[in-house]
Image 1: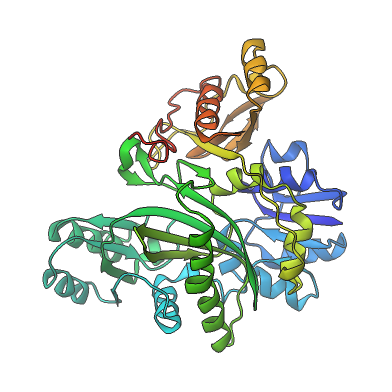
Image 2: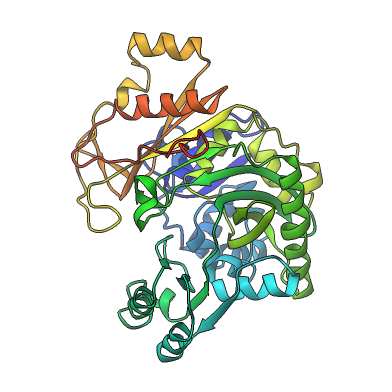
Length: 437
């Protein structure tokens, strides 16, 4: 089949990389691509949010399936546009995407569905939000209601911090229109875990567990980012917990959406807080996470195109999901200054040492330990024949091995081979799972 992938980051590079290995896919287009993607797919110079132009392109090229990576095109109604044009596309409608684009909508659905989640209140008025915060005690979380690139969530252990977070979102407009409404909710303790489910509107099947690392610095310090690393599977999250999430979260959510006449079809990303036997949903996303997707694509042993097509056609029961039991670890190499201001156009060196010129001692060791490594481009560009930085998150170095500890060591060994001025990355990805901070 012919496949069109929408997006240009590390998640989309991972999707294209896995699709490139599919026996059922013979042509891949990507709008708009990046230097890594462009090696294995045909770049399409159309913006991901230009949904009308993308639909026209897909129709003109007889594309069999379109896969949407980022959230912005979903919010812009790309699925609605493609469906009207009679084109098959994987992802939720704009209305169903509100599970991610509006935190207040998502929390309301959770209440209707009986999904366990933190107590909350939503505010369109900053003064009302301040009165609510001043009347509370203990820690709380302030969230921008709309899309804020993973940066609109502030954990507040005192009232002063909460009041500042409200002012940042609603009055200083740090997150633009996304902060016109805020959610204030109780602070939950426990371990954060991400859970993916492949949905067709009526039914769903699980698609892996992950732990993301949002904060910029080791030990979960500093501001939130789009994600500095992830690993999969989560050792503490066994089949019993998976069954509970499907039964207590995914199933009721799909039913509540159907009751509203808004069936959810696509990838449901469930952000969980787990504290012993207690589970709570922190948030929903409606697409593959990044960098969780990079780890997932390393582990996926079944045909990605066939699986996503089955969901798009309402036949998720026909999807044959096979995930490797091995562990995958993704480490993000970021630009200096990220998630605040950072420079672009900085030369990247050493990537060739992981793409065909791996040092012999490392190659032998990786072969003996059954390690597989892959670097996905997140924010890169080509300038005068030189690969340069072009984003806050630049590259995602991913490694897979039979044991989690081995995969962690390999990912960091690979990361050290790549250099660019200001490069930084967290050095504690998956350390909690391994019993160290």
